[in-house]
Length: 232
Image (cartoon, rainbow, N blue to C red; front, top):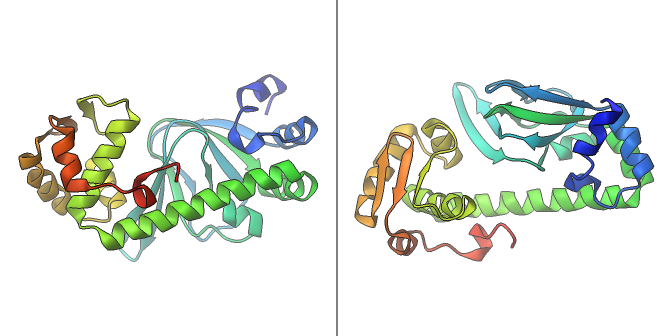
C-alpha cells in the first residue's frame, strides 16, 4: 500500500487501539485493491496467504461439495475473512467472491501472526472478531435447524428491512439464487416461500420487495434475540 492510502483504512475495527507503529508495519506490506463483481478472492483448500478485510462492497462466503454449492455468509464493510485459517496457519475451509464491486484490504498472513504476538490490542481485536464469528455460526445453526424455510425467509426480510432503515419498498441486494443458498434452500423452494408470504402482505416483483404490513410479517417470523439480534 502507498502511505497516502493508510488513512482510508486506519479506522477499521481490527485496528482499534492497536499501536500505530504496528498498524503501519502491516499496511506497508498490504494491498488495497478493487475487484469487480464475481471475482474469486479465496479458494477453499488453499493455504491462507492473506487476511482479507472488506472496505467497501459485499463479499459472498461459500462452499462446494461435488456439484452442489451453498452460501455460508454475506459480508460487508469492516468484516474480515477468513481469520481462523490465518491465525492457525491452515488452509481455507471456505471460498469467497465479490458479490458486488468491492474494495478489499489484503494483509499478509505472516504479518498478521507477527502482530498478533507483539501487540495485545491487536490480539484482542482478532479474538473479538473470532468470538463474533463463532456466535454468528451458532445463530445460523439454530436458524437452519429450528426454523422452516418460510420462517427463515420471513426473518431475513425483517432483518434486511431494519438494516436499510425500514423502507417499505426495496430491492434485493443480490440475486435470488444467492439468497436461496444463504437461507439453505433451492431456488424453486424460495419462489414458493415468496408466494406463501402473500397473505402476510408481502409483494414480490422480480428483485423488488414491498412489505405492506411489518407486524403481519413479524407474526409469522417471530424473531428472537438469541438468533436474530446482531448485537446479542
